[in-house]
Image (cartoon, rainbow, N blue to C red):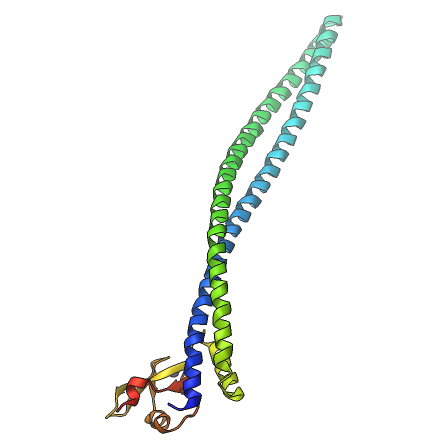
Length: 246
Ligand SMILES: [Zn+2]
């Protein structure tokens, strides 16, 4: 293998490790994000239910006020009843009292119903609160464990990046740009070995995408140190050391 492909292959080994470390770092960060979103969702639900309970409480207070007013009216009418002189007046006041009493029993029913609703919502709030606390604890724990892991991965990343810069200095600029573009597009796998399925039959495949390759690639790479791309996936092709000894 010529110096260009050899330097690229050295770079590819580092790039492969880099991609692996980056993936692990991403998954650690995503894990925290997912739990944090769950906590936020529960908090939003709790706030919504708290507002609902508050509104129901307001409604109850209004009904209570109406009922108290009616109660006062009834007390006054009872006083008037004692002062009446005619039967007609007496029965008219009595009818009014009964109407108010009926109103109040309706209000009492309504108050009971709303209060039941308040109790249900309050119980639900407690449940959501407990869930939220548990998730928050889990989130803090994951964050803490992750922080150590993330720090470790970040120092690995820095180390590999320095190694990569060092290895990249051996690669010609134009070739490096092609390599970088492929590494970005293919999650760190910029290169692929030519897999020799059957050399006598000139049966070759790309080790990156497993599509068949023309023998021309293999034959050229045997003698020349040049950049050749797989016709299907575009990765830079090389011949593995074991296949060079033939
Ligand atoms: Zn390919």
